[in-house]
Image (cartoon, rainbow, N blue to C red; front, side, top):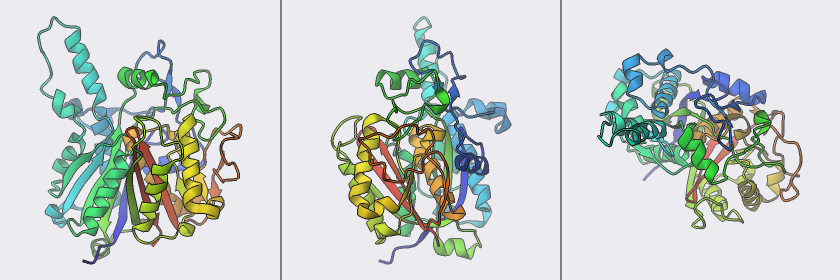
Length: 415
């Protein structure tokens, strides 16, 4: 069976450093931090009092009041990102075979705010259940692709992927594989997350996963820096239109790049910590590159998972050196989480767009907030510290690793 080629024809993003793809990219290459004091709730009693929130976001700018009430913020962000991507791809739904267009969407947690509000409301009452009829439909992680499909009438494969921080990379990978196999012509894919609330921040604080640099939030996300002390929470969403190559050519679509590989592995090691030698990370990159026989030497840029956790950054660095050998020193490596924070289930989609735009613009976004080298990390590697670098990028790879030991990678190539 001859496998189909798969390309990216549309992009959409709503992030802590820009509410459109253009704004997001401009902030990335200019090293803008999206971090600041939490405004969504009173965080004065929390260990972490800052996050990367969306800026200037008002649901009523995108939805009518009745519609907004039916959508948890994570689903709102999904709809906004998908709408942008559909428009960018020049999609006219009536001109497509709706049975061959699907939606696959990633969310690590889903409607956490809805769950928090409903359960808190019940706990504060007299024990009489007064749950909203929208409680469950707003909360469940798979509702985002459901809403997108209903808006556009897309009747192809439709489901959600849940693999913690690897969720949206898995979504992209599933879309890629189904198109390769001829099961569909096009997918709206990506991911969204909205966990900057009492439950999200409190829960991650209790795990000691978050930075507590309350005196200097703007520089709190410090991937690969000696002073890193955990990740910074982010929120938002991103979407890619993933399409079969001949289908895209036939409808005259602009093509950003080709997807040439995905990988999925498990660490099988620990609930939250990576394998200390990065074995799962090593294997997932190898699998992604081998999908279409990409030589590691062809890769010019890796957007790493790079969350700024003490163990994770070391393990990923070891894995990169194992996979790429001497070529590792010719790569540009960066963690855009230093600017956006960690968008959890949306991270893979947001960071895939960074890879795609690096290919299209010949610029690699930086890893900001680097102040001191860590002697446990090989700083001869080019982590693109503090300033974007111009570079021709023909092949880029994006890594995402999640609690539970989930690893996912995707490879993009210029046409």
